[in-house]
Length: 308
Length: 298
Image (cartoon, rainbow over all chains, first blue to last red; front, side, top):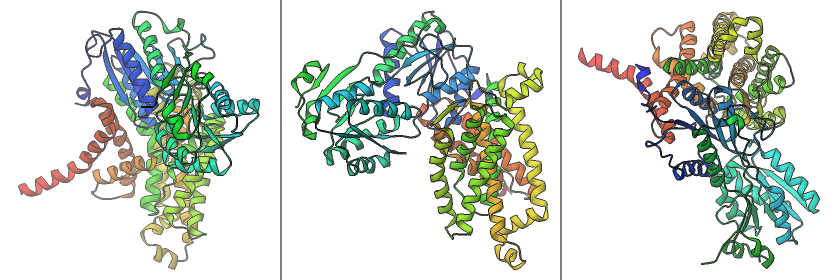
């Protein structure tokens, strides 16, 4: 009886099993970008492809069930966003392509050892966010701030990676760098207050899926404490961001999936780390933080959000 | 597809049996509102993973995970018995502290075990024929064997004089104190055992899924309690000790199967937890509704 309760999968066309570990703004953006790329190339769910979409809703053990479902059903291609979803996929599935996105460093999770040397059935679009470049830009725009800080999520697999990058950049730039841990979005506002209390003059926020999901709280608390915020991914209310968007990363991941759907083998497809950085200046947000963006920086900006 | 899928669900369920027994020991036998499993489950995974990546024998790594869980359970107990902290707050404090401890143990938030020796790779070396079996079969049989051993041991232990004393702590603390039994010592030992079981579950899951993650403890206690309550509700007749231990294990298997069923129904992905909750509710309510219907027919 239980065997009959699964959804009916039309296997006359490619079946993409899409899995994410939880819902959060960055992961949802990557998901949307992935499906937008497919649709732009004519791969439309229930028309030219079948999509089996799953969300473990934060339960890592459920990810294992999801991957087993993909492995044992008619899923022909697996797509994952986030590192734990990719780890679970690599553990369970070895006989069909896995395309990943929203993973900062695929080498830490065992997907490969270099962009071209990776597991034969795995390729994807890492999103190595340029904390160093964004930090240097922050220093250029706000040279008077001698102490910068960030919030970080100790549970984020890449927190240490990005923290090290930020600390090394701070040393290079000759400024002090502080980090305050947040284990949930409820810690964000007190975390910003703690940074201020420790002497931070600005927030150079390192990437984090959890903190990205509650970024409005960062902006709100930073405004109250008059600490300008710089990020590596465009977020609402942030005056300066230099980096990559998760939506674009998902789109890149979708382009890789399209190549696989057209017959290429993942083994011969190097990881495609997003490289097209975008400098986005939000003048309204800059005014709210009381900062002036130099004309030289405005001239380099890819996008300027004007005041209404 | 379904046989393999349900096998994977049962394999996961088998790994969660130790967790369910740990929660049963604390919540039902000792009647201690212990929420430290949300920390001791990932502690078991963290200790096992940290040792495995350093080449420690999987049996030793798993045993160390159990020992770490027992130590954490002991701390929860002494906060309550020696310092007078309420049971709930003791668990909250230990669970909160373990978040940092687990990060220290792992050195980072996630350890990949993809190319690391585990209990199953050791089993492959001992019995080469198992290499040909699907991973879920090997892991499933291994977890089942561990559960049978543990279940037998737990049932036996709870029937010994010592075990009876521990059970009495929950059933009738006044009487046990009057009889000269060290109630505090019994709570400490019982909670150490309970959290040792929980940590074992974490160590097994980490080896099965190929990584340990600091956030894998979220919802552990809820899953354990669901297993205990499912088991107890589905077998309310003749509460013998062995029957209860067996039914708690069945509850663990059933809970994971219901999560799997919710997945297989294939509704909107964001409805997974809602559907799981409805299935668990259905499993709990159906026997009662059926009995009521039968009673009405008479």
